[in-house]
Length: 80
Image 1 (cartoon, rainbow, N blue to C red):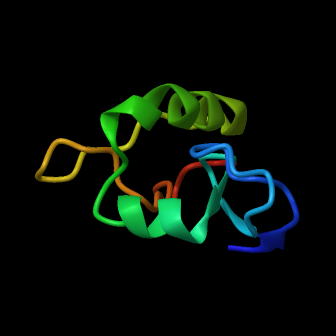
Image 2 (cartoon, helix red, strand yellow; image 1 turned 180 degrees about the vertical axis):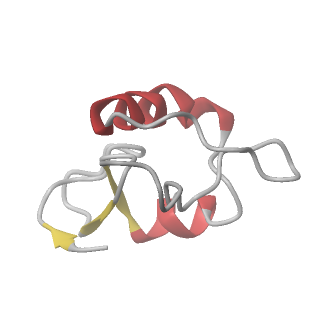
């Protein structure tokens, strides 16, 4: 995950230092990252789906709690 100067796409804090979440194409601040580490909250799914579509990826399997996983690694045989 690389550092970037953009604001958080979840909480809309324009001043927050953010990191990019690969494959979801999403910039999040530390607070939002920590708040979603065990799985993305359902209200964030539209943004996550947009990022996956932009990457040409399918929706990943959900966690046991029914949430999309925070990190997503496509299968090794998936051609990006």
